[in-house]
Image (tube, rainbow, N blue to C red):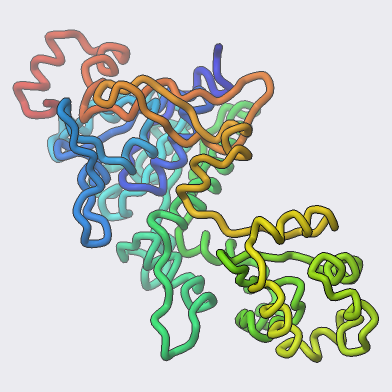
Length: 405
């Protein structure tokens, strides 16, 4: 079955997470994604993580970098030596047939190889050119390198807002978390630009930074601060709304989200405290805020007496908005995830079978499809060059010149 983006051609001059996550989704939706890699490959193929070494699954038939598998399914890998003029010429020729060029290489690298928007827009007027940077293309940090840990999580304010004060070390973001958030914005921007191109025939330049992504993610905090009304940091022990808070059950934490008064009575009945419903200290949103620390402490005692499974029955019976926290291992087997098509099994050249996480949007008529596993380095170089007008003699000459492997 043809995908939603069947016929759309994308050149991804990409590495690690931010842009590869976006093009993985677009490939799931049917786009033809050609991943341009240097001779040593995308760093993610062997990236060291958390001082635990590469995330490699070592098997008899070969090694698999687990993050790379997730980020690069259904793509074609083309290796080009862009340090050589002939290599750049090959890439320019591929761009002639492309709808989108998307990259997260730094501005200086793009300018060095004449792959920045200013260099390409006249030659390829229908090309959509998208760049993900760390901090944006202007300003004092324009040329600074920035993974999501530093440009988004730390510099973008998230780490500060979830920290527990100056005497406690702040938490570290999960791997690639803000890159994944940025990838959703890249995807939506590219689709909007494709729609504009469909109407006008014109391409254009798009830019997104990890820093701006973090600001948008914290939009509710930043917008109130722009009106000189910053929101305080969250302290669960004195939550302004004790029904909008985390609590520890006997076996795990749970999170409650009851933003309005209507939930108070059913909440009290669910936890076996009907006498609190009309207690003047707790009966209204205002009185609960005034006595927040006291009430949170009392709810802590109540919640700790039962397991989450016991509480879940009572909360569901009273139609409350509460969830126990799950581990990654539990999410893998959760019937809610399985029945809603979170995972796909594919044939893998190394493992035989592999299970991959599906992209989250599901279409009724053109379902997303993971067509094949992440490619070996340069696996499609010859195929793609032949599709773009090169002969076998041309390919042999490029090999002799060290342009392709």
